[in-house]
Image 1: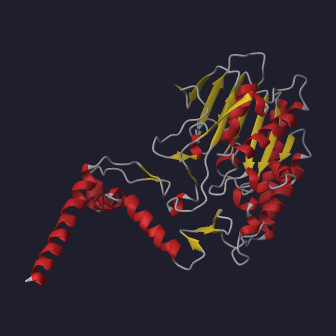
Image 2 (image 1 turned 180 degrees about the vertical axis):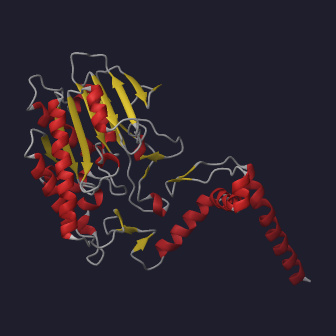
Image 3 (image 1 turned 90 degrees about the horizontal axis):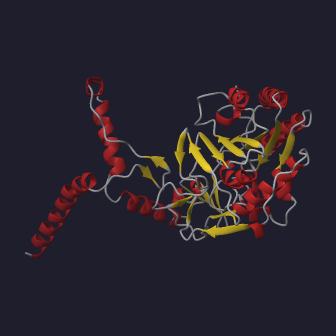
Length: 393
């Protein structure tokens, strides 16, 4: 009798799960982004004759239900917990070191030296041509090279997982040798960080980027190098002239997301603004937006994208001070915290992320805008890359 009752209860529970899961999946408010996977979720499928006939419409429903199933984040956290409990070095392609830093599982270094030499011949030729073009248009070109987090934490990889740095070092040498043949301002922040007591103090341990101390050191090194070429130097803000703020919510880093933020080492974002306010207007992709330099795109989590609101194709900040230089910065997400500092020393400040801005080429934009200063920000794993911010024409 008791056995039958237990069986009926189990069947009832199983039936309830089967019934409620799809109901709750469709009834609860849907998300558009997965925090832990850092990707857009599948959208509600829209039928048309072609997708129905090919079967794609029904496959899209499978993807939608999978992405939006109720309790998805709990499932992801449970899976990550189980994986972390197993005797393995990596979880979801992330290596957790003895210090608690999270590093990406990267392939061992393997490359064709002759091919890379040809690639860097092309890249350095393009870089020198860009420097010459900016100078011809009356501007000063500044190139900033930044190491990625995994390069700074390289010594914490287990020996058998260390990805290698020979290619990165070779590409860096080629880039800065080429810049030395131009009138550009060249700032190699790897050398600057390595001259500090501990370069890791300037980098996030759960994300690919530097922390705000790293951004501040880069900002001050960059502007000091530029000022050596200017008759009227740009203002460089000291700590005493800035108001600092720290997030109360822990950072969802690029690598901590992959293990559902279960790592014991936590970090919190910091940002700053001038104590003596610098009023400005701001446009993103041609539309007026809130005049702030820090805003989280999602109210529920804290992410590196809080700096400038994330990667935006074109941002224009106008401080209304026509006596100060017009500055154009382009690059990937390492630019974001820099933008929130550099703008305060400019009359007008513009930033481009050529992964998202496609209206004009960089050459066309410079020719039309005629900036006084052009700043390129590049991470050292991208020196030999063409796509996105590595493409100028």
